[in-house]
Image 1 (cartoon, one colour):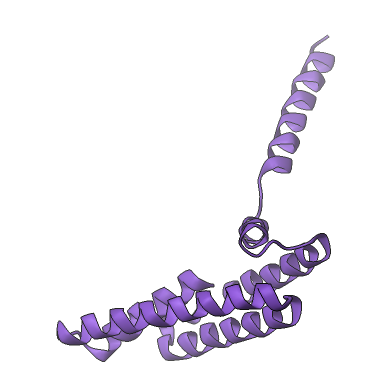
Image 2: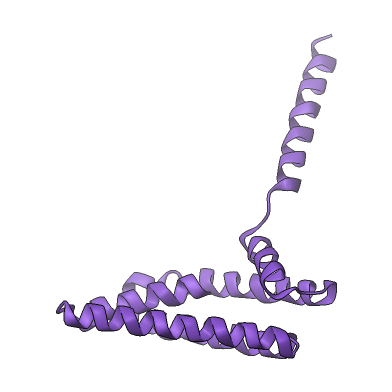
Length: 141
């Protein structure tokens, strides 16, 4: 009598955990959903965007160990990931979507320029400025 009850309890717990995992979205899927709304991606583009985002998160995870130990190399690698993503977006997007992408890139450059000027006038060190630029780059990814 104990075994069937134990099995039923275990089964319900397992089904509950599976159902919860089915509704949880990965960071790559969340970003893909945001990009779908922002750029009005069609079904084929959504599939490709998910691949791009999964690759981005995999690459970021690979370089995480050098974040503290070799900050300049980490910064170059993040910039490389960003360039790769932008190139992938350019290939994937149609003309209207590319206009939106370029507008967002322009906004990022303006935001970085404003932050740079503000920090420079406040007397921040180049290392602090580089750290802030890296934070803005990571937000944009």
